[in-house]
Every structure is written in structure tokens, then in C-alpha cells.
Image (cartoon, rainbow, N blue to C red; front, side):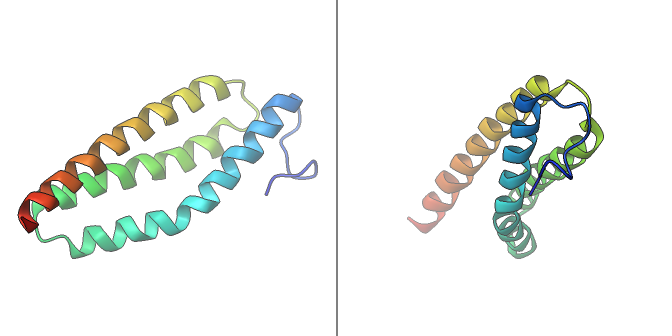
Length: 105
């Protein structure tokens, strides 16, 4: 959790609040990412492995982006890019769901 003591110097209140929100979001995602890793390892097809790895690579980059962007005023762009990735992840997961539903039918 980000606090006044751990927040980078020079951030506006808005930026500090956003940093806290995103940091907490990433912490909550850890369990979900562990599930994606397990699904990747258990995948019995190359396309599933590939798609889960796309999501995992994006999420790893998000964490790196946050560390690199501390103290810079790129937050609005960074958040917009993360939102774009989230929409991409949703499309991937819907595709996987449809494919697996067809296999079960």
C-alpha cells in the first residue's frame, strides 16, 4: 500500500491517489495471475498457452511500467494503455471460453 511515507516526492494528490489505487489493484491481481500461470502450464493446446502468455506478459509489463514511471506525469497515458490491455484480455478470455465451450459440446 502506498502512503505519504512511500509515495514518490513531487506527485500531486491526484497522482498519489492514482498510484495507490493502481498499486492495490495489482496486489489483488496476484491471485488471478497465479491462476493464469496454472492454466498456461495445464494447457493442452498451443493456442491456449499463447493466449494466456499474452495476458501474463502484459501484466508483467504493467508492474514494470509502474516502477519506471514513479515521479513522472505519464499516469493518464499509462492508465489508458492498461485499460486498452484490459479490453484485449477480455476479448482473449471470451475467445477461450467460446473455444472451450465448443469442445465440451
